[in-house]
View: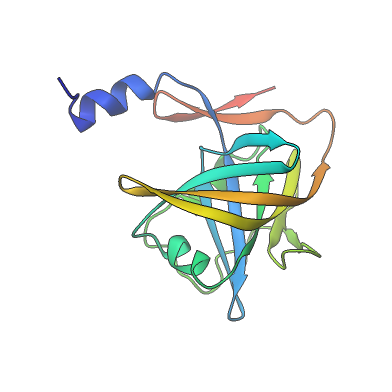
Length: 162
């Protein structure tokens, strides 16, 4: 039998996922979202994927731009993750209180204090239920403070990993 959405959510919440912020720049505005589905797909060529809800504002942006950035949040990144996961946050000024620099290859925000950053170009988008799987060619990769930990989503909560 197929599990109910609640049964599935409860079971899959036992799988720790790394937490990242995906960002893009479109029509003079910075857009960002929290994701816990970033996956390395291939080393040669370097590819990453993430999932985005088909009805989200960020998914609409991906129809207009093909370059985006990923900031892998450090163990101190929970407030940033919460902000970019907040439904109804304003489009204008989303990054007003989050320090960042602009990626040279993507034009998108690379958040300060992250443990790693990637700039990518969309190579494919695949529909998968109520989400789309976005595959990107990695254009650049960099690491932050080598002592920085990570942030995982586990059992419905954000948890720092030193």
